[in-house]
Length: 457
Image 1 (cartoon, one colour):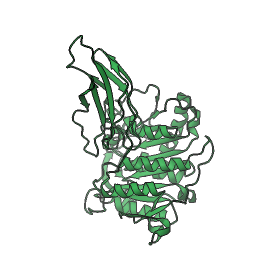
Image 2 (cartoon, rainbow, N blue to C red):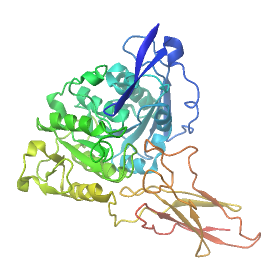
Image 3 (spheres, rainbow, N blue to C red):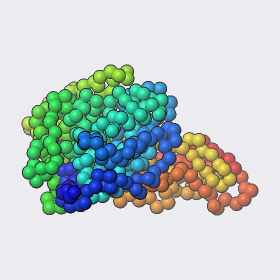
Image 4 (cartoon, rainbow, N blue to C red):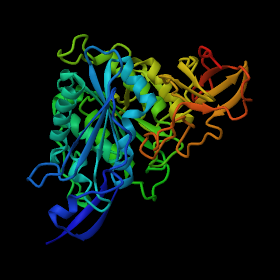
């Protein structure tokens, strides 16, 4: 039997592809989905086979979760959801290993979870990025199974903070519509759920907007080249879709904002330097003190407003326009960060990163551990020998999508494979000579940590 399949990056574009469809063959997957980092504690993984049952997920899927060391009871789950297409799905395999996103989860005693849907390149992305097509049920099953594996059964009940790129934004927004009582906040990068019928995308089902969803903080984030400043590009449909979603939600009093990245198109760029502080603010305000209690409401005491594609924000009491047409920002600190982000994405930082720990020397091989800076992540390390720099890691930092990051970043904002190890081999040290080594962390704002403790040879 032949079907017209639609390859969709929701809110972006659609290409009709006709292919031969055999249920068992279409959902079978091989590499690249079988290459991923090991899931030894504090990491845990479950994988589900594709289903042929109506309404269930037709793709195989991996869920990997990271649990902060020492957490007795989880307060929530931070979800990092990749976008559509084989490459983006593959990138989801490393999402739980991102040190910067781990810093956010750690601060709030949350798990960090990253799905990786095994979508063939020409298959219909809607079959997973619309959570009604089985991915919502699979996700919730994974929370139960991962909770059992990790010894944290509360994972199945705690709230979610959702981040999604492209089709992942469609998924995250859809989960807000389906489960508003579980979502603490949702950041939608370059993809939103469809709220109104569109004849040009008739195969994409619309969502209803429940009243409870109006209480969930949402940020629509997209690149200016996705229809704001450039109107005839491959991704120029993103802004019209975001605008429709924003007007629908904000017009009914929803807590939704817009942050336009002035430098990018569909790539994620430097969005994490606003997304993580924004989610931090929302989790601080909304997570209950005790696991199992309901989410708290966002405060209205320090709300700021801004024109959706503007560059200035004002306290709500001083905003001169229609507040139900203005982007919603939760407080003054986020408003200041938003103002800088929409200008040039160069958010400032005055706090240095944590110092590396557990520095060990085995022969000429130096290893260490380090947590990322919540505000600015981790750009690299300086290795000192006898008080003088002997190496900068990485030697040639690069990131085609934004600030250079120690772990490197893929298109969907996840570390590259293989994961970059924290290690250095000193090939210039003379055999038999004693040396003292220290390691210094550097965040993406260029700030340096205190030196680590010494490792002696």
